[in-house]
Amino acid sequence: MENADAETLARSLIQEAYEKLKEINPEEALGKLEYALRVDYTQQEALYALKCLNWWLERIKNMNSAGGACDPYSRGSFLLSQWKSYYSFLDLVGNAYESCQYAVKHFVYAFALQNYQEALAEGILRHDPELLEQIGRCYKGMGCYEEALSYIKQAAQFKQEDAATISALADVYALLGETKAAKALFREAFFIDPQRIDLDNLESGLILSLVKRVSEMGYSGPELKEWIPVYGALFGVFTVKRELKLAELGRLKQRIFDLESKLRGGPKEESVLTPSLLNKYLRLIDHYEGKDNGGALIGEIKLKIKIIKPVIFERYMC
Image 1 (cartoon, one colour):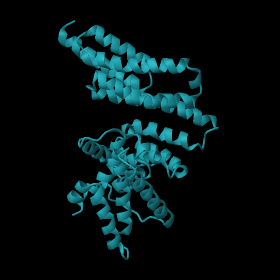
Image 2 (cartoon, helix red, strand yellow; image 1 turned 120 degrees about the vertical axis):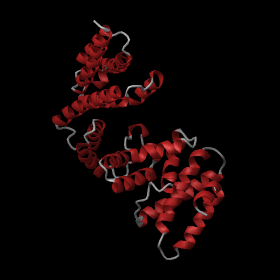
Image 3 (cartoon, rainbow, N blue to C red; image 1 turned 90 degrees about the vertical axis):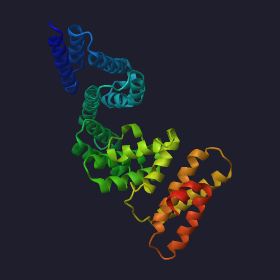
Image 4 (cartoon, rainbow, N blue to C red; image 1 turned 120 degrees about the horizontal axis):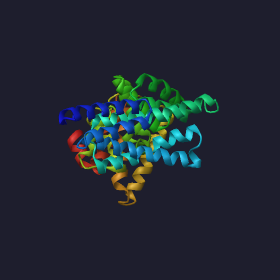
């Protein structure tokens, strides 16, 4: 076979393999990728896709042989739990072929969804918010945003104080172009508990551009998550605000008092406590805007910000 013909056939086989993955048929996908390499052994994308697919097939094999993952809900949850390990794997082999990653992503989420829908059909977990949320996350991962919104909204009704659920809902709204709702919900989620938010599972440009910008400042890990809402407010991303209820205001003031006390206790965890406190200060400033005596109270908060983080005060609040 001529080199040009071999390359054309190999590329066709690779695309067919991706389609088989989307159809949750990994065995046929594997066969087509192996055939592509036999046709054209220089085909790097086929080799790369084989590495990625075999990584997941090995996990699925382990899942099927594990007694703890015998029910459909556990199988679905096991699959989704492997993403962090897969991202670590990609750090080693690279993320060179976007079409491959799209097909792999669709396969994993569709396979997990298949298991979750089986669990839903059994009826025992029909109204379980965790199951509803996971189904929504699968639809989001597959690019079916309207379906994702329906399920995650149902879950959020039961998990109104869960930052992970609210951030997932915000992400779907952003992907649907509902920017105002997305901004409000992202702001809410990062106020409730930034550490509960899985940044790897967020997909919308609205939040990813903010994460990228803050991470380029040198922040990472838990520290990064605490700085995101601070700079989200300062950069004009988290701009949709709401007035706090009386009970919420009381809890916010108590959280501020606790954080101030911890910071006075010494430098331990200062890199995380400082942005967390700044986030609370900014939320309190929002609450006082437009209120009687609000200007004086805001001035007091800004003075506190100047003391604990002068660069923030001088750059954004002077």
